[in-house]
Image (cartoon, rainbow, N blue to C red; front, side, top):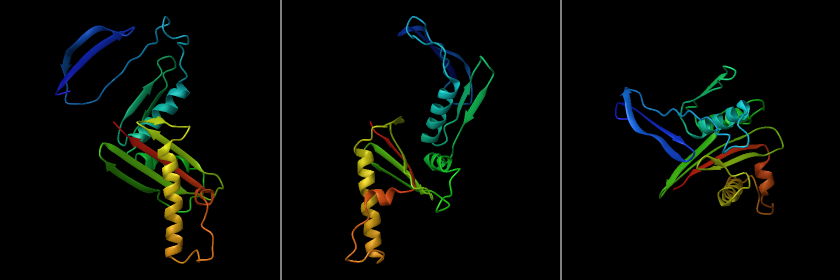
Length: 192
């Protein structure tokens, strides 16, 4: 930071070596080395595949972030950077499917201190594939952000269908299940 390379060390919840300047640079970024302490962790052998999957997910959720993961046990290295962010995430999730429109639909906005990003793309399957995140954490159990998205999507599709005369006055509205069939979506909120 500010043209300086800084270093700090921690062990067992305490500062082991204070923050100090160890060099100069024109590059920015953070490197983290982590070695699990067997006095704290029951399991000290990590799954490279699990870490690889989570770090790839973080790179998707943070557009342009470069992440490099190295397994010094095997020499395997993986690097991730997705300039498309969650758009690239949706494309990745749909890579083996026949999509119904070539580019994912992307919507973003800011309200007060909350940033919202949504990317959706339909494919020809019958299943919905939705992922919702708050502050980069997968909210697998759902939440108001996911239920609100589902309701808004159904309402928007029904309103459009009525406006364009695709649904007549006598027709029932499409259900939420109908509007999400074949949908791949990533919803990402960043809140304070």
